[in-house]
Image (spheres, rainbow, N blue to C red):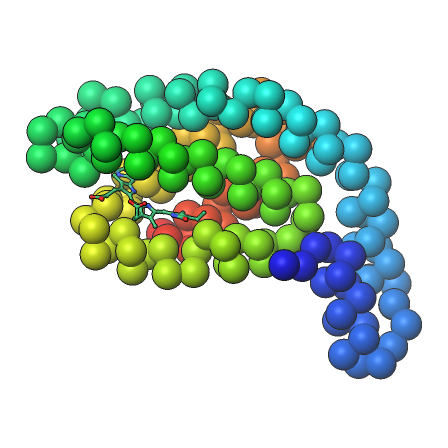
Length: 162
Ligand SMILES: CCC1=C(C)/C(=C/C2=NC(=C\c3[nH]c(/C=C4\NC(=O)[C@H](C)[C@H]4CC)c(C)c3CCC(=O)O)/C(CCC(=O)O)=C2C)NC1=O
């Protein structure tokens, strides 16, 4: 896993250079937004289950996926879906803290699309529920932190192939 700092330093190191102005600028941006990131992460972790509950109500309940024959139908599959949403929220929060997407590639997206396809988990409905979490989270943490989190929710959605 990388973060914004190791990312900038590794890029300079590959070229055997000190940090240039643009690298310094990226670091400065990361440091000045540090408190915002930490506060947002604290708010999200204190409200994780409410975020998920609201997103599920907005995007999945009363849709085809929760009806008989739907992929979320039966308690076991419903619970697996909620657990997946909890993974997405938690890892998006880690990535937001790190200011880097690499943790999502390594621990979430690696092989996920193939797993979903082989189990018939609908990717469109999953993306909708992640987008609903994005909105619910932004309403809770405010627009600036909401925009930061949006980067990582969207990254998960594009990794799923949308
Ligand atoms: C930390 C990284 C990580 C991720 C991301 C992860 C996802 C993940 N979700 C799975 C299943 C599942 N995922 C869902 C999710 C859904 N079904 C729907 O209709 C909804 C749209 C959606 C929720 C948004 C369901 C229902 C299953 C169970 C499918 C089945 O066994 O038939 C499985 C198959 C194994 C299992 O059931 O546990 C994996 C590996 N596992 C991991 O370790």
